[in-house]
Image (tube, rainbow, N blue to C red; front, side, top):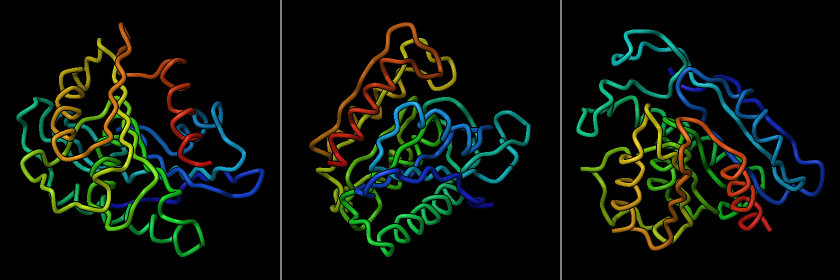
Length: 217
């Protein structure tokens, strides 16, 4: 359960912002860090935790994951307890960065696949204003539990990126996340990548780099 020791990329210049990045199922924090190194900003600290290994119901196999995935359909049930535990663990990471002196509005949370889904949930439910939220090939958790009481980050920038040929998290789930979140939040962007599957591409990574740089100035 929970988060294991994060892989951290320290800034090489004055520390102005922090990115906390959550990997996809079956991955590791150090893999996320390797990808983020290609777009790193010298003023930004990158924290890439690794999820504990757990059984994934829909795959009938153990792997690193932030929570269980009972099913892959758009109307599948959710591991509500696991999601909330992961969200609270992530909030503790945010609290620690703030306690270390980084303003909350200089912290960006993001992730890939289930990590992106977690990042959006973390941002929506955090009680302090964040700098931004990013989900690559992700989806929206708790669609029936969204409400306008999550006031702190309703105008925070959200960035969704999704490949049109994603066979793991269907493109339609990314579109639905954007459509649903836009009903509550005023600054939600959705970027499509034609022909891309459940992965990233140079164009998307450039978009992510710009997103981080714009919010960490």
